Image (cartoon, rainbow, N blue to C red; front, side):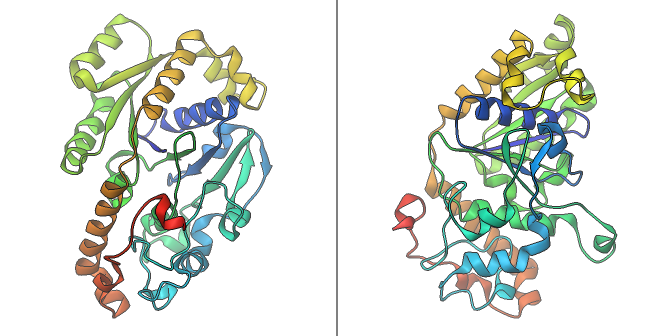
Amino acid sequence: MRIAFVGKGGSGKTTLSALFSRHLARSGAPVLAVDGDINQHLAEALGPTEVSAPPLGEHLTSIKDYLRGTNPRIASPEAMIKTTPPGRGSRLLRPLGDDELHARHVGRAGGVPLMATGEFDESDLGVACYHSKLGAVELYLGHLVDGPGEYVVVDMTAGADAFASGLFTRFDITFLVAEPTRKGVSVYRQYRDHAERFGIRVAVVGNKVTCEDDLLFLKEQVGDDLLTHLVQSPWIRAAEQGRTEPGPDALASLEPHNLHALRVLRETVDSHVRDWDRLHRHAVEFHLRNARAWGDARTGEDLAAQVDPGYVPGPAGLT
């Protein structure tokens, strides 16, 4: 299952991404956390870094070359863009599999396997955009064959920037973290309107709720999309200040209400039924859109020809 956490900057989406990843790891479930935010803070939120790994964005060309495998429709890594869908001959991935990509790019923080896109730096200014680095995450998810009980948790860019690519269609469910303020729910309306067009499931997670009035405000603003909420947490504040023990087991002392909220998130994810055809259809749609808008001109190729009409998405592709 692929899970995205989105929200306004400062809403607590990185904190929730880390808490949920640690909650899954604590149960023994296979989980991979991915930092896809322009501000790379997920490792810090998870806990002490135990194993460092190079960010995906610094090795995008080699990642493309590895994923294209022997697919005859992709002539070179330079002809592969972030939305290029897999086809027959492409290398497909299993979560945390024994392969070159995971061996190089998976580190570990707070007891949780972690991949990162890399930071926005001065070399990106004026010549590129951070979303080009996010292309590595989009390609990774596009070539990933994950199943029930396997989790990839992505901390996305803040605000409406999450719509700057087709990446937002790559998830089974999106948790939108919202504070009980007008600014806190403004991103919800933007995301809801975009997501509805593509049948993307968005569930709101209230955060930093201090009283019944806060909860009532969220219910009035987002209605049935409000899945659960977390109350203002001394435990989280202590963790952010480095005053709690690292590792997934430390969650045992999280406030009971907030632990219950994490369980609700997992139950929601586990009840979802993967639609492989929908995921692949969205991938192809955004690829053709990008090909027409800029991809063909940039690569000098007809990128629509990269779509393999005989490709069967999902576990069947592994064989």
